[in-house]
Length: 203
Image (cartoon, helix red, strand yellow):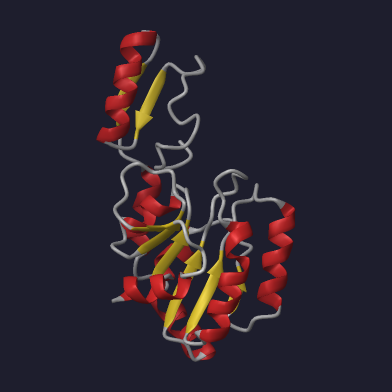
């Protein structure tokens, strides 16, 4: 599976390609078992999700690197912005300016930008340009997001499976216009209150 975001379109679509679904946990298992009674052409086994092992195995691996990064930038916290690429769900067009203002007003934060490879090139270029012109914004190019998730103190997103991975690290999440029906984090429809939301969630 792509991730833990069961609310995304197509996650439970049965395409008749597979004989076996290995599910991440009870929520997914129940849904696929219900679908199994309808389609009757596949089995379901709950295995958990192997990607999560990497968080436990590497949770202390980047402590020194994080400490050095904060010291070098004279910062106290790391904020990770990792939006979805879906044109209908992404917050990228609306958060470009708020993130710029936040970075300018909060030099004690480092902002890591991590985009999905399928993100529109228009927004990739816009955010890369922002990072080049803002000392405390770093545009991440490596595909592996696990390191960024472990190092970050807070996550900003929208409707992305990365939210659930970050929550499992017991750290705060802020989303904008998420379509999730079960929200256990801060969600907002207003893009101009980013600074307040970050400070509230840190406290």
